[in-house]
Structure formats: structure tokens, C-alpha cells
Image (cartoon, rainbow, N blue to C red; front, side, top):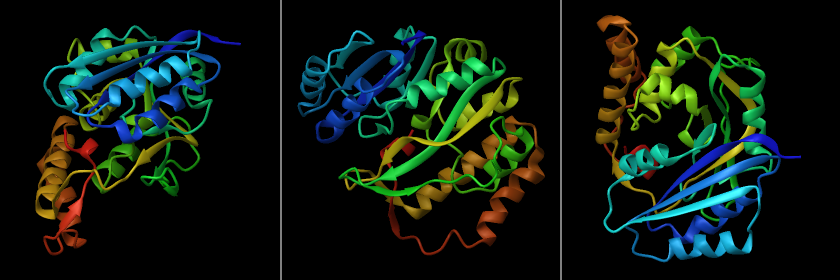
Length: 280
């Protein structure tokens, strides 16, 4: 039985032919929910778009509608996803990068069920499985601050954001209501990861968590690299931004940064691999 309503899955594609078939198949394998898949090729130089079209033809399903668009020149990840959000028509939406995967056939249904059962929830995220270039599991991320809760305590979540190296979710792991997105952002469509989380924390909407690995995030050699110094500078800017936007004051802003410096995260400035999906 197909649930009423649709999830819009928005995928930005840039030179992703190597992985897009697995991503596409994971979308067509979803069960119990109508899916609108919006794929935007952002000026790729490979045949990823054609591969996507072939998978769509092979896996055609009445429960999945597809929309393929192509940019003649690369515009970047934020404008691409902003375009996808503008044209999405689903009751809910999810961002899914071209190299990531929906881990289970019920990944979308499980998240829509939480949103159906909890009208106050505006966003739900799940555990994330880290996978390698071959699709093998590396590890499943855990969130100790959750402590078995499905509706999260915002002050506890905020503290863990400020004093944690990573944000509590990767954008592919969350699903949000379209109505919540429109209400909070009033037409602003470039709010993902940090900005989205801040706006959710400032709102009266609840944030829910599913303690199930419904999403797989791929780590591979095609990711961008940058120096540790650059990564840390962006990290510190992000934590200061979060504290400022939440009205937590300069002392707490600096406390978060000083904490991480005291933990020795500066280290020696070696090059480290950072996913392209973090470069927004």
C-alpha cells in the first residue's frame, strides 16, 4: 500500500557517473511512499546524466516520478539544491548527493511515519552509515546525546553542537516538511546543514531522531582536500555563527572555540581529506 503524499528527493550531480547508478537504484527501491526524484546535472563532463536516465528507464515505477535537468555550466552545490527545492512539489523533501545511498527500502517511509505521528516535528534525522567507494560499511555513526529519545531536547542538542567536531546530521540523513521549510525560510532556499539546524533550533518546531541507519554517506578518493588550517578556520566560524544566531553570547561563543583548541585539534597543519559535501 502506498502512503498518500510524496517525498521529493533532490540530487545534485557533478561528474558522478561512477556512483550515480547505486544512488538511483536506492531511490527506485523505496517502498510504501510516492517519490518525486529531481536530479540536476550541474555541468558535468561525464555521462552521469545518461546513466541516471537509463536506470530510470530500467526501474520505472508508478510510485516514482522523475525530473532531469541540466546546467550548461557548473553553478555549484548551493544554487543547484536551491533550484531543486524551488521546483519540488512533495509534502516532504530530502537532499541526496550523487554518491550517497538510501540504505533500506523503507528509509523514506520510516521518516515520513515519524512526521505523520508527530505534527510538531519539523525535521527528522537518522543514524548514518559511512561507506567506502565500493559501498562497504566503514562504521555507523552514533549520537551519545540522544540517549534513546526520539524528540530531542534542544538545549542538550545545542550544547553538543557547540562542543562537537561534527554537526549531528549530514543533510542526506534528514527529512523535513515542505511547510516547515517555507515557514522558516520565507523563500530563502540555500539553508542546509548549519543554517538549517540553527533555524530549526530557533523555531518552535521539534527535531526528531530515528535510531536506525537509514542513510549511507560515501567517503572516497574523489573528495576534495584542504589543509587542516582551512578546515579548522571554517569550523570555528561555524561554531561562532551558531552561538551568535542562538543569542548565546560572546563568552559561550569563545568557550566553544577555546575548548576545541585546548583539546589539541589544531595539531600540525597536515592536509586532510574533507568531503566535497562539506564545502558549501
